[in-house]
Image 1 (tube, rainbow, N blue to C red):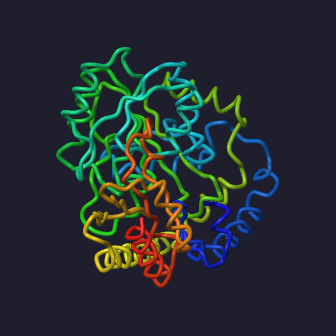
Image 2 (tube, rainbow, N blue to C red):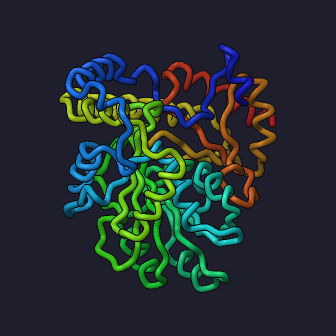
Length: 375
């Protein structure tokens, strides 16, 4: 797929990429100059593993209203992208053969991170409202050995775009609390809500259990900066993550943290986030309407309330085989089997709408639907 997408006439819905034309290049350049003028050589020096104090304080301040409580900056750890956070969590929790609980389907990057530590997977059923609490209880009742943690993406999930319903969130937390199962809440898309009220993070519920929160600047500033964060109230877990990070890279890039912080504290940042939301909302609508116009009756699809992805199912199809046909039609996507640990469900596909213009979305969907009919 990557080879094919290098060709200029191929339309790709495959990558999970933000729109590069929206990157705040000028503002980042200005922020970099201000950082160098103010901090000079200290912005280029080694720093502390946990992250510069300004970044940790900003994360705590921004998340506090969503969590409906004060977050201590000491609970925040800055990492090189959420993927590094997932890797560290796999490193400290998973021994070869350990079970991890996932949504079905789940984020491919998390599966890759946990695969590196030879995890096995227990999958929980989902529907249009996200993970089903009753299924989670059944999985935990039968689990042998007992899993190390539950991993889920509650808002505009990758790959399906689904959001965990408000009336299920505390239930999931209470089930995990009762079973003493840690929860890893991966929330990269929370700022990209197109409509409706923001829902409380799982981390906002008071619990005696362990809930670890992952957030990122990749979707609201730029992924190339690799600035992300973990919020870990559990001091024992946090200490082990810090030790893992020291062994991996000592600390995240000092100057990148300073520049990121300088930019997100400027008035331009909030306007930038609103521009992203407006653009992605329109592109989602264009993709959804194009599917309504061109998709054959065997195809079903959703209309997510935010994020970057739309989930399509083609009844009776193997989308890995469909990709071979669609490639000839000059359009590509990610086959759904990649998001199932056992690779045992074959009729889904993930479509990214954030990285294509409206014209390319319309043309690409028409090509894709033609490929579905051919296949």
